[in-house]
Length: 232
Image (cartoon, rainbow, N blue to C red; front, side, top):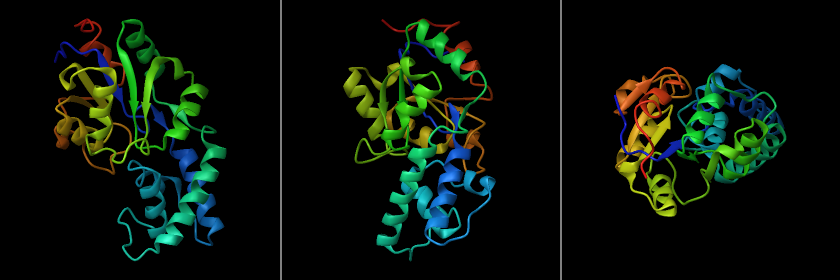
């Protein structure tokens, strides 16, 4: 399909541009060891990623994607602080780009599209990762999971981008790997692309109402650059 009159592309980060699970898992397990709990395999932690640091911490303390409602709030706050401290040390040790990400972003940027990161990851970690992976110069704006009172699947981050850049939701496209991205886009009145890889808790991205679903990040170019020009 053709996306017309788009000039701002909003990208999720974890599970869309980067595979950050190895570093997240290392830091979560370091936190669990620090509080006297048993670590988990990386693949188990992978299934918990996608809703921000606080939720990931609570899932790790619960040992499940379903958070234990009886977790002590003070204990959770302490564990989250420990996790963030470890993650700051490990933020881009084994984190890697997904295939075709850098070349595709370069092409989109060179064609005049305005690129923005909208992620549930705490904002303090985003720019260091982008810089380490050579992506920083592509993005004019970053909105993290703690930048605003609400985060995806709430549309607040997306509408904030529109307000700050002076654009309408119809001129934007949200690109992500999980239902949180799709639900936020839908609520913001924005079209969306769902990617079949990444972190979606084992759910089929096709079932969440994305405007278009792609298997390969590079295919974004076919729906934009080769078919349309950025809106003036």
